[in-house]
Image 1: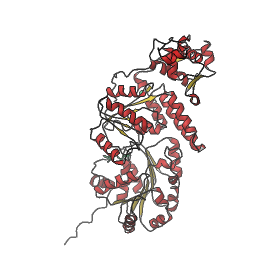
Image 2: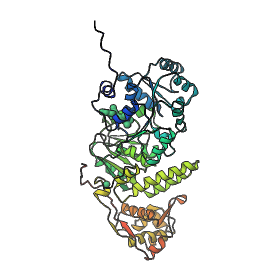
Image 3: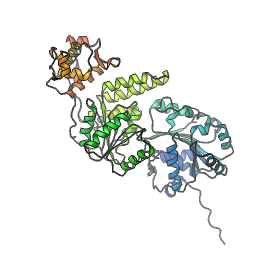
Length: 524
Ligand code: ADP
Ligand code: ZN
Protein backbone atom coordinates (compact mmCIF):
# COMPACT_ATOMS: atom_id res chain seq x y z
CA UNK A 1 0.00 0.00 0.00
CA UNK A 2 1.18 3.47 -0.78
CA UNK A 3 0.30 6.13 1.77
CA UNK A 4 -1.71 9.04 0.40
CA UNK A 5 0.59 11.93 -0.51
CA UNK A 6 1.15 14.49 2.23
CA UNK A 7 -0.88 17.58 1.44
CA UNK A 8 1.60 20.18 0.27
CA UNK A 9 1.90 23.19 2.58
CA UNK A 10 -0.10 26.19 1.49
CA UNK A 11 1.67 28.86 -0.54
CA UNK A 12 0.49 32.45 -1.08
CA UNK A 13 -0.55 31.56 -4.62
CA UNK A 14 -2.47 28.45 -3.62
CA UNK A 15 -4.30 30.31 -0.85
CA UNK A 16 -5.13 33.16 -3.23
CA UNK A 17 -6.71 30.74 -5.67
CA UNK A 18 -8.26 28.13 -3.42
CA UNK A 19 -9.49 30.21 -0.50
CA UNK A 20 -10.20 33.57 -2.11
CA UNK A 21 -10.87 32.46 -5.66
CA UNK A 22 -8.60 35.01 -7.37
CA UNK A 23 -6.08 34.20 -10.07
CA UNK A 24 -3.54 36.98 -9.68
CA UNK A 25 -2.27 39.36 -7.06
CA UNK A 26 -2.83 43.05 -7.26
CA UNK A 27 0.09 45.48 -7.27
CA UNK A 28 2.07 45.15 -4.08
CA UNK A 29 0.18 42.27 -2.52
CA UNK A 30 2.65 39.52 -3.41
CA UNK A 31 5.64 41.53 -2.21
CA UNK A 32 4.05 42.31 1.14
CA UNK A 33 2.71 38.80 1.62
CA UNK A 34 6.07 37.15 0.96
CA UNK A 35 7.86 39.56 3.25
CA UNK A 36 5.43 38.80 6.08
CA UNK A 37 5.60 35.06 5.44
CA UNK A 38 9.38 35.36 5.85
CA UNK A 39 8.85 36.99 9.24
CA UNK A 40 9.49 40.65 8.38
CA UNK A 41 7.52 43.75 9.39
CA UNK A 42 5.64 45.83 6.83
CA UNK A 43 3.74 49.05 6.33
CA UNK A 44 1.09 49.04 3.62
CA UNK A 45 -0.27 52.32 2.25
CA UNK A 46 -3.00 51.66 -0.26
CA UNK A 47 -6.11 53.61 -1.09
CA UNK A 48 -9.49 52.29 0.00
CA UNK A 49 -10.45 49.34 -2.16
CA UNK A 50 -6.80 48.70 -3.00
CA UNK A 51 -6.81 45.21 -1.48
CA UNK A 52 -5.16 45.65 1.90
CA UNK A 53 -6.97 42.79 3.64
CA UNK A 54 -5.39 39.99 1.64
CA UNK A 55 -1.97 41.37 2.58
CA UNK A 56 -2.40 39.92 6.07
CA UNK A 57 -5.13 37.32 5.51
CA UNK A 58 -2.97 35.23 3.21
CA UNK A 59 0.11 35.19 5.49
CA UNK A 60 -2.29 34.29 8.31
CA UNK A 61 -3.19 31.14 6.39
CA UNK A 62 0.34 30.36 5.23
CA UNK A 63 2.15 30.77 8.55
CA UNK A 64 1.45 28.43 11.45
CA UNK A 65 -0.61 29.79 14.34
CA UNK A 66 -3.22 32.48 14.85
CA UNK A 67 -3.03 35.98 13.35
CA UNK A 68 -4.20 38.79 15.61
CA UNK A 69 -5.88 41.61 13.71
CA UNK A 70 -6.53 44.93 15.41
CA UNK A 71 -9.44 46.91 14.05
CA UNK A 72 -11.02 50.08 15.43
CA UNK A 73 -14.62 49.47 14.42
CA UNK A 74 -16.84 46.68 15.64
CA UNK A 75 -18.96 46.72 12.48
CA UNK A 76 -15.90 46.33 10.25
CA UNK A 77 -14.70 43.38 12.34
CA UNK A 78 -18.03 41.66 11.99
CA UNK A 79 -18.13 42.15 8.22
CA UNK A 80 -14.64 40.82 7.74
CA UNK A 81 -15.17 37.81 9.96
CA UNK A 82 -18.45 36.90 8.28
CA UNK A 83 -16.83 37.09 4.86
CA UNK A 84 -13.91 34.95 5.96
CA UNK A 85 -16.17 32.36 7.55
CA UNK A 86 -18.15 32.19 4.32
CA UNK A 87 -14.90 31.34 2.57
CA UNK A 88 -14.24 28.54 5.04
CA UNK A 89 -11.61 30.37 7.06
CA UNK A 90 -11.51 29.82 10.81
CA UNK A 91 -11.99 33.39 11.96
CA UNK A 92 -13.63 35.11 14.93
CA UNK A 93 -13.69 38.41 16.74
CA UNK A 94 -13.46 39.38 20.34
CA UNK A 95 -14.81 42.66 21.63
CA UNK A 96 -17.03 44.10 24.30
CA UNK A 97 -20.16 43.82 22.15
CA UNK A 98 -20.20 40.06 22.72
CA UNK A 99 -21.94 38.37 25.65
CA UNK A 100 -19.64 37.12 28.35
CA UNK A 101 -20.28 33.44 27.61
CA UNK A 102 -19.57 33.94 23.91
CA UNK A 103 -16.33 35.67 24.83
CA UNK A 104 -15.38 32.69 27.00
CA UNK A 105 -16.15 30.31 24.16
CA UNK A 106 -14.00 32.26 21.72
CA UNK A 107 -11.16 32.29 24.21
CA UNK A 108 -11.41 28.52 24.68
CA UNK A 109 -11.22 27.94 20.95
CA UNK A 110 -8.32 30.39 20.73
CA UNK A 111 -6.38 28.43 23.37
CA UNK A 112 -6.89 25.25 21.39
CA UNK A 113 -5.40 26.94 18.33
CA UNK A 114 -8.79 26.84 16.62
CA UNK A 115 -8.48 30.12 14.74
CA UNK A 116 -6.42 31.26 11.79
CA UNK A 117 -7.45 34.86 12.41
CA UNK A 118 -8.78 36.60 15.48
CA UNK A 119 -9.99 40.20 15.21
CA UNK A 120 -9.74 42.26 18.38
CA UNK A 121 -10.20 45.83 19.51
CA UNK A 122 -7.06 47.70 20.55
CA UNK A 123 -8.26 47.78 24.18
CA UNK A 124 -8.43 44.02 24.22
CA UNK A 125 -4.96 43.56 22.81
CA UNK A 126 -3.57 45.90 25.44
CA UNK A 127 -5.03 43.91 28.36
CA UNK A 128 -2.32 42.11 30.36
CA UNK A 129 -4.53 39.13 30.77
CA UNK A 130 -5.03 38.81 27.02
CA UNK A 131 -1.35 39.30 26.27
CA UNK A 132 -0.52 36.54 28.75
CA UNK A 133 -2.87 34.28 26.84
CA UNK A 134 -1.11 35.13 23.60
CA UNK A 135 2.29 34.30 25.14
CA UNK A 136 1.07 30.73 25.48
CA UNK A 137 -0.05 30.56 21.83
CA UNK A 138 1.59 30.45 18.46
CA UNK A 139 0.87 33.85 16.98
CA UNK A 140 1.53 34.02 13.25
CA UNK A 141 1.48 37.82 12.93
CA UNK A 142 -0.06 41.03 14.21
CA UNK A 143 -1.98 43.17 11.72
CA UNK A 144 -2.91 46.72 12.69
CA UNK A 145 -5.70 47.86 10.40
CA UNK A 146 -6.45 51.60 10.00
CA UNK A 147 -2.95 52.14 11.36
CA UNK A 148 -3.16 55.92 10.92
CA UNK A 149 -5.15 55.91 14.18
CA UNK A 150 -1.78 55.66 16.02
CA UNK A 151 -0.81 59.06 14.71
CA UNK A 152 -1.63 62.49 16.01
CA UNK A 153 -1.37 63.46 12.38
CA UNK A 154 -4.20 61.15 11.47
CA UNK A 155 -7.72 62.48 11.33
CA UNK A 156 -8.95 59.89 13.77
CA UNK A 157 -6.31 59.49 16.40
CA UNK A 158 -7.07 56.88 19.08
CA UNK A 159 -5.33 56.82 22.43
CA UNK A 160 -5.43 53.01 22.54
CA UNK A 161 -3.75 52.79 19.19
CA UNK A 162 -0.90 54.91 20.48
CA UNK A 163 -0.03 52.14 22.94
CA UNK A 164 0.20 49.42 20.33
CA UNK A 165 3.96 50.00 20.17
CA UNK A 166 4.14 47.66 23.18
CA UNK A 167 3.33 44.75 20.96
CA UNK A 168 6.62 44.72 19.11
CA UNK A 169 8.49 44.96 22.42
CA UNK A 170 6.55 42.10 24.00
CA UNK A 171 6.62 39.90 20.90
CA UNK A 172 9.83 40.89 19.12
CA UNK A 173 9.94 37.82 16.87
CA UNK A 174 6.45 38.04 15.47
CA UNK A 175 5.89 40.09 12.30
CA UNK A 176 3.78 43.23 12.59
CA UNK A 177 2.06 44.87 9.63
CA UNK A 178 0.37 48.27 9.70
CA UNK A 179 -2.21 49.05 7.02
CA UNK A 180 -3.78 52.38 6.11
CA UNK A 181 -5.27 54.42 3.31
CA UNK A 182 -3.65 57.58 4.63
CA UNK A 183 -0.30 58.33 3.13
CA UNK A 184 0.91 61.81 3.91
CA UNK A 185 4.55 61.74 4.95
CA UNK A 186 4.05 62.85 8.54
CA UNK A 187 1.52 60.11 9.25
CA UNK A 188 3.60 57.46 7.55
CA UNK A 189 6.70 58.27 9.62
CA UNK A 190 4.64 58.40 12.78
CA UNK A 191 3.05 54.98 12.19
CA UNK A 192 6.42 53.42 11.59
CA UNK A 193 7.85 54.90 14.78
CA UNK A 194 4.81 54.34 17.01
CA UNK A 195 4.37 50.71 16.02
CA UNK A 196 8.11 50.10 16.45
CA UNK A 197 8.33 48.45 13.06
CA UNK A 198 11.77 46.89 12.50
CA UNK A 199 13.22 47.70 9.06
CA UNK A 200 9.77 47.30 7.54
CA UNK A 201 8.99 46.77 3.91
CA UNK A 202 7.03 49.88 3.00
CA UNK A 203 4.63 49.44 0.16
CA UNK A 204 2.90 52.51 -1.11
CA UNK A 205 0.41 52.14 -3.92
CA UNK A 206 -0.66 54.82 -6.32
CA UNK A 207 -3.20 57.24 -4.92
CA UNK A 208 -4.18 58.55 -8.31
CA UNK A 209 -7.75 57.93 -9.39
CA UNK A 210 -7.42 59.03 -13.03
CA UNK A 211 -11.09 58.48 -13.89
CA UNK A 212 -12.29 60.93 -11.23
CA UNK A 213 -12.55 64.48 -12.49
CA UNK A 214 -12.01 67.02 -9.71
CA UNK A 215 -13.97 70.19 -9.84
CA UNK A 216 -14.44 73.11 -7.48
CA UNK A 217 -17.03 75.85 -7.77
CA UNK A 218 -17.67 78.79 -5.58
CA UNK A 219 -20.80 78.29 -3.54
CA UNK A 220 -23.38 81.03 -3.48
CA UNK A 221 -26.69 79.22 -3.25
CA UNK A 222 -25.58 75.76 -2.30
CA UNK A 223 -28.86 73.86 -2.47
CA UNK A 224 -29.89 75.36 -5.80
CA UNK A 225 -26.47 74.63 -7.21
CA UNK A 226 -26.68 71.02 -6.08
CA UNK A 227 -30.14 70.60 -7.61
CA UNK A 228 -28.98 72.09 -10.91
CA UNK A 229 -25.97 69.82 -10.88
CA UNK A 230 -27.86 66.62 -10.09
CA UNK A 231 -30.29 67.40 -12.90
CA UNK A 232 -27.43 67.14 -15.35
CA UNK A 233 -26.12 63.82 -14.08
CA UNK A 234 -26.80 60.26 -15.11
CA UNK A 235 -26.44 57.51 -12.57
CA UNK A 236 -25.86 57.40 -8.83
CA UNK A 237 -24.26 59.93 -6.59
CA UNK A 238 -23.53 60.92 -3.03
CA UNK A 239 -23.92 64.44 -1.65
CA UNK A 240 -22.10 65.22 1.56
CA UNK A 241 -23.26 67.96 3.94
CA UNK A 242 -21.71 68.83 7.28
CA UNK A 243 -24.87 68.68 9.42
CA UNK A 244 -27.84 66.39 9.85
CA UNK A 245 -30.24 69.30 9.44
CA UNK A 246 -28.79 70.20 6.05
CA UNK A 247 -28.89 66.57 4.98
CA UNK A 248 -32.59 66.37 5.78
CA UNK A 249 -33.40 69.72 4.15
CA UNK A 250 -31.46 69.12 0.97
CA UNK A 251 -32.87 65.63 0.67
CA UNK A 252 -36.42 66.97 1.05
CA UNK A 253 -35.73 69.52 -1.65
CA UNK A 254 -34.37 66.94 -4.08
CA UNK A 255 -37.17 64.55 -3.28
CA UNK A 256 -39.82 67.21 -3.93
CA UNK A 257 -38.23 67.85 -7.30
CA UNK A 258 -38.76 64.23 -8.20
CA UNK A 259 -35.33 62.77 -7.65
CA UNK A 260 -35.00 59.32 -6.15
CA UNK A 261 -33.05 60.52 -3.17
CA UNK A 262 -32.65 59.47 0.45
CA UNK A 263 -31.02 60.87 3.57
CA UNK A 264 -28.40 59.15 5.68
CA UNK A 265 -26.90 60.30 8.97
CA UNK A 266 -26.16 59.02 12.44
CA UNK A 267 -29.43 60.45 13.77
CA UNK A 268 -31.44 57.83 11.89
CA UNK A 269 -31.91 54.45 13.48
CA UNK A 270 -29.86 51.49 12.37
CA UNK A 271 -32.67 49.85 10.38
CA UNK A 272 -33.33 52.97 8.38
CA UNK A 273 -29.65 53.49 7.65
CA UNK A 274 -29.28 49.95 6.48
CA UNK A 275 -32.37 50.27 4.31
CA UNK A 276 -31.02 53.38 2.59
CA UNK A 277 -27.67 51.73 2.06
CA UNK A 278 -29.29 48.68 0.50
CA UNK A 279 -31.60 50.73 -1.73
CA UNK A 280 -28.60 52.68 -2.97
CA UNK A 281 -26.61 49.54 -3.58
CA UNK A 282 -29.46 48.07 -5.60
CA UNK A 283 -29.96 51.24 -7.65
CA UNK A 284 -33.41 51.84 -6.15
CA UNK A 285 -32.18 55.17 -4.84
CA UNK A 286 -30.05 57.37 -7.11
CA UNK A 287 -28.82 60.02 -4.75
CA UNK A 288 -27.90 59.72 -1.11
CA UNK A 289 -27.59 62.96 0.83
CA UNK A 290 -25.43 62.20 3.82
CA UNK A 291 -23.09 63.26 6.55
CA UNK A 292 -19.66 61.65 6.73
CA UNK A 293 -21.33 58.83 8.65
CA UNK A 294 -22.10 57.40 5.20
CA UNK A 295 -19.04 55.76 3.83
CA UNK A 296 -17.03 53.16 5.71
CA UNK A 297 -17.87 49.89 4.13
CA UNK A 298 -19.92 51.26 1.19
CA UNK A 299 -19.02 48.97 -1.66
CA UNK A 300 -20.88 50.36 -4.64
CA UNK A 301 -18.82 50.41 -7.78
CA UNK A 302 -20.95 52.58 -10.07
CA UNK A 303 -21.15 55.83 -8.11
CA UNK A 304 -20.85 58.49 -10.83
CA UNK A 305 -20.54 61.64 -8.75
CA UNK A 306 -19.73 62.82 -5.26
CA UNK A 307 -20.67 66.36 -4.29
CA UNK A 308 -19.38 68.18 -1.22
CA UNK A 309 -21.89 70.84 -0.33
CA UNK A 310 -19.56 71.82 2.54
CA UNK A 311 -15.81 71.82 2.64
CA UNK A 312 -14.30 68.78 4.44
CA UNK A 313 -11.89 69.27 7.33
CA UNK A 314 -8.91 67.57 5.73
CA UNK A 315 -7.56 66.41 2.40
CA UNK A 316 -7.65 62.84 3.70
CA UNK A 317 -11.39 63.03 4.33
CA UNK A 318 -11.94 64.67 0.98
CA UNK A 319 -9.90 61.99 -0.75
CA UNK A 320 -11.70 59.15 1.01
CA UNK A 321 -15.14 60.59 0.33
CA UNK A 322 -14.50 61.43 -3.33
CA UNK A 323 -12.82 58.04 -3.69
CA UNK A 324 -16.26 56.42 -3.44
CA UNK A 325 -16.92 57.61 -6.99
CA UNK A 326 -15.88 55.61 -10.01
CA UNK A 327 -14.69 52.40 -8.37
CA UNK A 328 -15.64 50.64 -11.63
CA UNK A 329 -12.99 52.66 -13.45
CA UNK A 330 -15.52 54.52 -15.61
CA UNK A 331 -15.67 58.31 -15.73
CA UNK A 332 -16.82 59.93 -12.52
CA UNK A 333 -16.81 63.40 -11.03
CA UNK A 334 -16.09 64.99 -7.67
CA UNK A 335 -17.57 68.44 -7.18
CA UNK A 336 -16.70 70.66 -4.24
CA UNK A 337 -18.74 73.77 -3.50
CA UNK A 338 -16.47 76.20 -1.76
CA UNK A 339 -17.16 79.40 0.06
CA UNK A 340 -14.66 81.50 2.01
CA UNK A 341 -17.29 82.12 4.67
CA UNK A 342 -17.65 78.39 5.39
CA UNK A 343 -13.95 78.24 5.62
CA UNK A 344 -13.76 81.02 8.18
CA UNK A 345 -16.41 79.23 10.23
CA UNK A 346 -14.59 75.92 10.16
CA UNK A 347 -11.40 77.59 11.37
CA UNK A 348 -13.20 79.30 14.16
CA UNK A 349 -14.74 76.02 15.16
CA UNK A 350 -11.40 74.22 15.19
CA UNK A 351 -9.86 77.00 17.27
CA UNK A 352 -12.43 76.43 20.00
CA UNK A 353 -10.90 72.99 20.62
CA UNK A 354 -9.61 72.22 24.13
CA UNK A 355 -6.36 70.56 23.17
CA UNK A 356 -3.84 73.07 21.79
CA UNK A 357 -1.66 70.52 20.04
CA UNK A 358 -4.66 68.91 18.41
CA UNK A 359 -5.95 72.30 17.33
CA UNK A 360 -2.67 73.08 15.58
CA UNK A 361 -2.75 69.81 13.73
CA UNK A 362 -6.33 70.33 12.64
CA UNK A 363 -5.64 73.86 11.48
CA UNK A 364 -2.75 72.63 9.38
CA UNK A 365 -4.89 69.87 7.94
CA UNK A 366 -7.60 72.31 7.10
CA UNK A 367 -5.14 74.76 5.55
CA UNK A 368 -4.11 72.02 3.12
CA UNK A 369 -7.76 71.46 2.24
CA UNK A 370 -8.25 75.17 1.66
CA UNK A 371 -5.26 75.37 -0.61
CA UNK A 372 -6.67 72.51 -2.66
CA UNK A 373 -9.94 74.40 -3.05
CA UNK A 374 -8.20 77.65 -3.92
CA UNK A 375 -5.62 76.14 -6.25
CA UNK A 376 -5.14 77.82 -9.59
CA UNK A 377 -3.04 74.87 -10.81
CA UNK A 378 -3.99 71.27 -11.59
CA UNK A 379 -6.06 69.92 -8.68
CA UNK A 380 -4.83 66.37 -9.10
CA UNK A 381 -1.26 67.57 -8.74
CA UNK A 382 -2.14 69.36 -5.52
CA UNK A 383 -3.86 66.22 -4.23
CA UNK A 384 -1.12 63.78 -5.18
CA UNK A 385 1.61 66.06 -3.91
CA UNK A 386 -0.17 66.11 -0.59
CA UNK A 387 0.15 62.34 -0.46
CA UNK A 388 3.78 62.81 -1.52
CA UNK A 389 3.19 61.11 -4.83
CA UNK A 390 4.87 63.90 -6.76
CA UNK A 391 3.75 64.46 -10.26
CA UNK A 392 5.18 67.12 -12.53
CA UNK A 393 2.55 67.17 -15.24
CA UNK A 394 -0.95 68.52 -15.25
CA UNK A 395 -3.65 65.86 -15.46
CA UNK A 396 -5.97 67.10 -18.18
CA UNK A 397 -8.98 65.91 -16.21
CA UNK A 398 -9.77 68.56 -13.62
CA UNK A 399 -11.55 71.88 -13.90
CA UNK A 400 -8.31 73.85 -13.90
CA UNK A 401 -6.75 71.75 -16.67
CA UNK A 402 -9.93 71.73 -18.77
CA UNK A 403 -10.67 75.39 -18.37
CA UNK A 404 -7.69 77.32 -17.02
CA UNK A 405 -8.58 80.43 -15.06
CA UNK A 406 -8.14 83.64 -17.04
CA UNK A 407 -6.54 86.38 -14.98
CA UNK A 408 -7.56 89.92 -15.82
CA UNK A 409 -7.05 93.40 -14.41
CA UNK A 410 -9.38 93.50 -11.42
CA UNK A 411 -8.86 96.97 -9.93
CA UNK A 412 -12.13 98.53 -11.04
CA UNK A 413 -14.16 95.44 -10.14
CA UNK A 414 -12.54 95.30 -6.72
CA UNK A 415 -13.12 99.01 -6.14
CA UNK A 416 -16.84 98.56 -6.71
CA UNK A 417 -17.00 95.91 -3.99
CA UNK A 418 -14.67 97.62 -1.54
CA UNK A 419 -16.36 100.99 -1.76
CA UNK A 420 -19.77 99.40 -1.38
CA UNK A 421 -18.62 97.66 1.81
CA UNK A 422 -17.29 100.97 3.05
CA UNK A 423 -20.54 102.83 2.28
CA UNK A 424 -22.39 100.16 4.26
CA UNK A 425 -20.09 101.04 7.18
CA UNK A 426 -18.57 97.54 7.14
CA UNK A 427 -21.68 96.21 8.84
CA UNK A 428 -23.17 94.16 6.00
CA UNK A 429 -22.65 90.52 5.08
CA UNK A 430 -21.96 89.24 1.57
CA UNK A 431 -25.49 88.86 0.23
CA UNK A 432 -26.52 92.30 1.43
CA UNK A 433 -23.52 93.90 -0.24
CA UNK A 434 -24.44 92.10 -3.45
CA UNK A 435 -28.05 93.23 -3.22
CA UNK A 436 -26.85 96.83 -3.01
CA UNK A 437 -24.30 96.39 -5.79
CA UNK A 438 -26.95 94.97 -8.04
CA UNK A 439 -29.47 97.64 -7.12
CA UNK A 440 -32.18 95.21 -6.04
CA UNK A 441 -35.58 96.64 -5.23
CA UNK A 442 -35.87 95.21 -1.76
CA UNK A 443 -37.88 96.72 1.05
CA UNK A 444 -35.16 96.27 3.66
CA UNK A 445 -32.70 98.17 1.47
CA UNK A 446 -35.13 100.99 0.93
CA UNK A 447 -36.04 101.18 4.61
CA UNK A 448 -32.38 101.49 5.49
CA UNK A 449 -31.95 104.17 2.85
CA UNK A 450 -29.35 102.06 1.10
CA UNK A 451 -30.94 102.63 -2.28
CA UNK A 452 -29.61 106.15 -1.95
CA UNK A 453 -25.96 105.07 -1.73
CA UNK A 454 -23.65 106.02 -4.58
CA UNK A 455 -22.75 102.35 -4.97
CA UNK A 456 -26.37 101.22 -5.34
CA UNK A 457 -26.69 99.41 -8.67
CA UNK A 458 -23.09 99.86 -9.86
CA UNK A 459 -22.82 96.10 -10.32
CA UNK A 460 -26.14 95.38 -11.96
CA UNK A 461 -24.55 94.06 -15.15
CA UNK A 462 -23.40 90.91 -13.32
CA UNK A 463 -25.15 88.05 -11.48
CA UNK A 464 -25.16 87.20 -7.78
CA UNK A 465 -22.88 84.28 -8.41
CA UNK A 466 -20.39 86.49 -10.21
CA UNK A 467 -20.14 88.82 -7.23
CA UNK A 468 -19.92 85.97 -4.76
CA UNK A 469 -17.00 84.63 -6.66
CA UNK A 470 -15.27 88.02 -6.86
CA UNK A 471 -15.77 88.61 -3.15
CA UNK A 472 -14.30 85.22 -2.35
CA UNK A 473 -11.25 86.10 -4.37
CA UNK A 474 -10.91 89.39 -2.52
CA UNK A 475 -11.16 87.54 0.78
CA UNK A 476 -8.61 85.05 -0.39
CA UNK A 477 -6.28 87.84 -1.50
CA UNK A 478 -6.58 89.42 1.92
CA UNK A 479 -8.48 92.61 1.04
CA UNK A 480 -11.66 91.65 2.87
CA UNK A 481 -12.11 89.82 6.12
CA UNK A 482 -15.27 88.08 7.31
CA UNK A 483 -16.07 89.04 10.89
CA UNK A 484 -17.69 85.94 12.31
CA UNK A 485 -18.30 87.70 15.61
CA UNK A 486 -20.58 90.23 13.88
CA UNK A 487 -22.96 88.18 11.74
CA UNK A 488 -20.34 87.65 9.08
CA UNK A 489 -20.05 91.37 8.36
CA UNK A 490 -17.43 92.17 5.75
CA UNK A 491 -14.55 94.36 6.90
CA UNK A 492 -11.79 95.92 4.83
CA UNK A 493 -8.20 95.17 5.71
CA UNK A 494 -5.21 97.49 5.44
CA UNK A 495 -4.46 95.96 2.05
CA UNK A 496 -7.73 97.31 0.67
CA UNK A 497 -6.73 100.98 0.98
CA UNK A 498 -4.15 101.16 -1.87
CA UNK A 499 -6.54 99.24 -4.12
CA UNK A 500 -9.35 101.67 -3.40
CA UNK A 501 -7.01 104.55 -4.18
CA UNK A 502 -5.90 102.86 -7.38
CA UNK A 503 -2.28 102.81 -6.23
CA UNK A 504 -1.60 99.13 -6.91
CA UNK A 505 -2.35 96.58 -9.59
CA UNK A 506 -4.70 93.67 -8.86
CA UNK A 507 -5.42 90.55 -10.88
CA UNK A 508 -8.63 88.58 -10.54
CA UNK A 509 -9.65 85.32 -12.16
CA UNK A 510 -12.67 85.55 -14.44
CA UNK A 511 -15.34 83.65 -12.45
CA UNK A 512 -16.53 80.31 -13.75
CA UNK A 513 -20.15 80.27 -13.02
CA UNK A 514 -22.28 77.78 -14.78
CA UNK A 515 -22.39 74.05 -14.84
CA UNK A 516 -21.46 73.89 -18.44
CA UNK A 517 -22.08 70.55 -20.05
CA UNK A 518 -18.55 69.34 -20.37
CA UNK A 519 -16.14 69.17 -23.16
CA UNK A 520 -15.63 65.57 -22.28
CA UNK A 521 -11.93 64.92 -22.07
CA UNK A 522 -11.54 61.21 -21.52
CA UNK A 523 -8.91 59.95 -19.20
CA UNK A 524 -6.31 57.78 -20.89
P1 ADP B 1 -9.04 47.79 1.30
O1 ADP B 1 -9.00 47.11 2.64
O2 ADP B 1 -7.68 48.19 0.82
O3 ADP B 1 -10.01 48.93 1.23
P2 ADP B 1 -10.10 45.29 0.42
O4 ADP B 1 -9.07 44.44 1.04
O5 ADP B 1 -11.42 45.38 1.09
O6 ADP B 1 -9.54 46.76 0.21
O7 ADP B 1 -10.26 44.84 -1.09
C1 ADP B 1 -11.13 45.53 -1.94
C2 ADP B 1 -11.79 44.54 -2.89
O8 ADP B 1 -10.83 44.02 -3.81
C3 ADP B 1 -12.39 43.34 -2.18
O9 ADP B 1 -13.64 43.08 -2.76
C4 ADP B 1 -11.39 42.23 -2.46
O10 ADP B 1 -12.00 40.97 -2.44
C5 ADP B 1 -10.88 42.61 -3.84
N1 ADP B 1 -9.53 42.07 -4.07
C6 ADP B 1 -8.46 42.17 -3.26
N2 ADP B 1 -7.38 41.56 -3.79
C7 ADP B 1 -7.77 41.06 -4.99
C8 ADP B 1 -7.10 40.31 -6.05
N3 ADP B 1 -5.81 39.97 -5.97
N4 ADP B 1 -7.84 39.98 -7.13
C9 ADP B 1 -9.13 40.35 -7.22
N5 ADP B 1 -9.81 41.03 -6.28
C10 ADP B 1 -9.16 41.38 -5.18
ZN1 ZN C 1 -5.58 68.70 -13.71
